[in-house]
Image 1 (tube, rainbow, N blue to C red):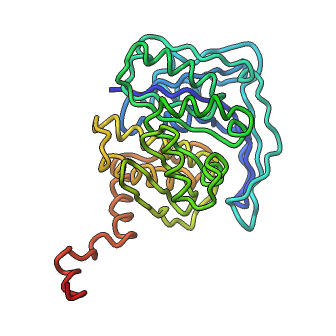
Image 2 (cartoon, rainbow, N blue to C red; image 1 turned 45 degrees about the vertical axis):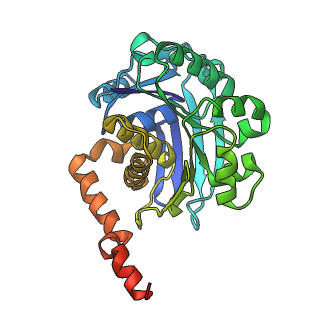
Length: 318
């Protein structure tokens, strides 16, 4: 079993009230791959420049990540710089976005990457997403497809984006972008309307407030994990996606219950990610730590106190 993720490879400079981290390893393909590697083998597909460190390539390889689809090109690696609000870390200001070699990125997949059971199309141009999907599905037509997007593509390439959505099993989308794409302010209405575009499952991300999940006739709402140690939220969404699809690939099932459990693991690993700068937490956590936080999360949502159906009915005199 394996996952292929197509996305960005980057260096980020991040400033929060907890400090400043310069040129830390980042990008959607990197965060996703390191999170997914806790469960399965991962093939990131991306491009990096002459400034990309050999030690960072070796770091990926040490974490069960196959780098054979990461391509080096002349120029500099994609660079992003952001400043997070001291009073509300959910708000950030982008200070620099230098696409560099990522600007003309055209994904290419080798045969092992094309054969992956799960394909995740991270936040890139929908036309490129559609091209990658065509290549992968031509090799493995049963592959399970995940999709991410952002307001830029909703505003500038909505027609192409909707074409990709019709071919996707799961779309992950931020709450503000879900409202933009659907035209609905109410998130329940937004989720259902996006499903009507063709996606089999919609996961609406609400940051520290958790996620909403829409699949078939079921709807789930999961809170975020409560942590008072948020230092850098930059890679939270991609970490959530990586662990979400990593779990699904591990259990080799995509039923409603599996989507629900995948969302729990996504929430747990994303909560670790934000507690340090960049990918540092993803490199430190192991299975025991994930399991311990899983138990903490079950206590957080009051799982052990939930009444049985019969007892609940007794209290209501039913």
